[in-house]
Length: 218
Length: 86
Image (cartoon, rainbow over all chains, first blue to last red; front, side, top):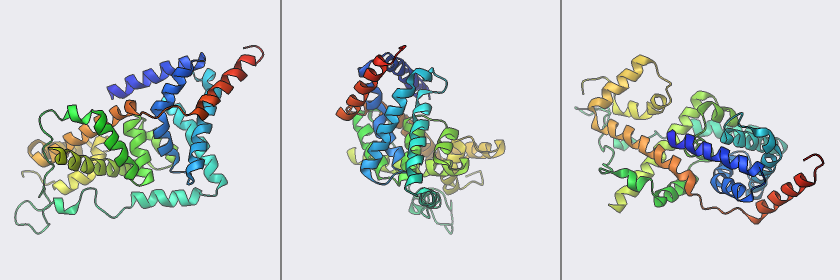
């Protein structure tokens, strides 16, 4: 949380520089948020070119409003509110709102358990039923070194892109961009409970992928 | 195990725990379990590490600012400079 709030402050400093006409600061904001924005907009918009257009419109709106920004909200919350408005307008025009709702509910109601059933003992086991049969692998004494490396960051982004679109968006907004749960619920029009389910499913899948990845390398 | 919580339930519902969406009694039940279950404690710690890794991932995006976006910035700046009163 600390890391994400200091990054937020950096974003706000960059936004102030953009307001003064600094193109490098703008490029830096784009570099930080373009990929997460694309992942978010993908929930609402189907065509790849249209996704890019919506994100581009988001940046245009941001520039037009930057003088009025003055840190009322966090920079990121503001950025994603703009993107959310743009993406919804696009989805309405394409008459996709019902389809999006159904897609979100399908991801919430996924039948597969959060972690594979065969990692746990059966209900009928004489000892420790429904406890770990194959517990999480040990990640070693100082896993941070590897986990915070560029290589892991690249790996995790690839894995996020393999998640179903709404789960990918939720985990990106919450864990990569550090937005608050209630803002994410509102931006995606999902209940607090469903936001939580989507986030936990996404994290569990990424955890499993990371476990395999770390295991392979040792 | 001394508690009545199954690992499979803890794993499925850890999201509620992490998001602070549990009663005090339920939180306590989860914490008691994790204190003596190595597997569940490890899962909890590793999810925390995963979140740390994800929040660090934001800075390492190497995507360049596209020429299209550079042009948008230039247009915006020009429009702003020529706007009366600015």
